[in-house]
Length: 520
Image 1 (tube, one colour):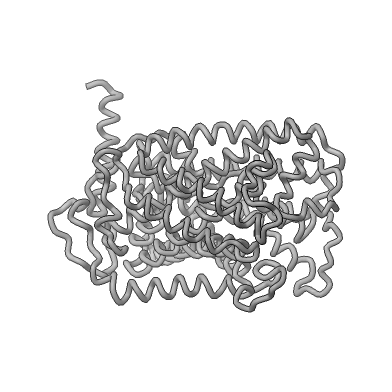
Image 2 (cartoon, rainbow, N blue to C red):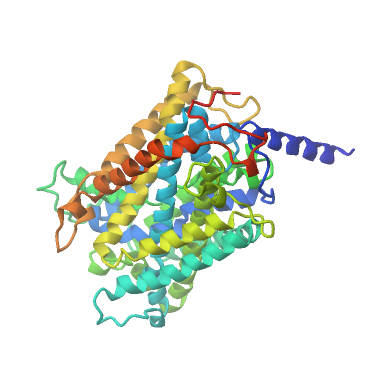
């Protein structure tokens, strides 16, 4: 046997052992290479989608100085990502957040982590799809199907465009992992090229120096708690909304070759490239804007307007087409991650109709029922976003839930470190002696940002009339309801059914249990 064949055989055996440790038999097809996993992570973060979707919010909330939230969020999320790299190397299995917390803690915590991340991913699927409304009508007015004189015309039109996109992502994800990965990788390649081109084009059109990022834009923060710092914390939403989802690379572990090595690399590369390219786009956009006081830049579609102002109709439209491609592949990756999480939880019979949701199509090799179910739920969510106020609440809640899910991994991981029971894979990614301080910083960061995101501010959750107390408190109430009602259902009903379903079990019979899973 040749050396490459022997190495491949050894890697395949190791991959099988990773799944066997959880009591599963291999069910998904391993067809993804290192670039596919990198593309999944970076397309979920999606530089162009995130920067274009909420630039207006950051600029309008804290002026040009909001740019500093970008490197600040990067450093905080890097702490989380480094912890995830250790976990991705130790437990390369589908539904990463859910299965990681199962090994770090107990079934109750892991279910809550999985439920939180799953609901957040479905909400994100809807929220990202709504980004098409800020871009497509700017490219061609024909994409505005609803006449502008109709009440809530933009919101209704956004729902139509978003529904079409979610139908597309549902079909692609259902038809096969390889097709999804090919489309995703092609889209990411085009997005990266477009991002570099956009950076160059903005750089040659600069009209002011980099000192502009110290300008607060005349924001009046005199009556605000914490003054301008309070305004800056609000503006951070624009960056917090972008730099998450890097764990998607590890969620595809059971469909990837050599995931123990590739997943940690993909996580860090996705976050690093997003930081560099996104930061330069935002910096050069602020430096090249003809008039930063233009109200159009602080309204929905602000960066799209800025690009058209700076680059003109021809080149500007080409860039906006690239933004549309980025939105499409971003939603494709969000949908793919949600499917793997639903598959992982239902494989343990931890979701209603779990045996159906985890069924793998013999024709396509994918969990088709999960793909369709998630798509349908996301489309239903779209029909409560006719109001721009509700759209902001939905977007914010998606971020709150994901940061909460991350805490449900990093906190149990720290507990194991303190107890001395955490053991990274000897031949995999390890933080070594830096593990404890990095883990502590990840929790401090995640906790602080979760509070910041959920804080009941009018300018985030109830910015315009009609004012409603339940919208202002939406960042606390809705996540509380989702988590509380979900866990109550699990505790009273679902936990009594927990156990690997026969179709995916390595052994013939797995008894339901709610005991903590011990390290092998």
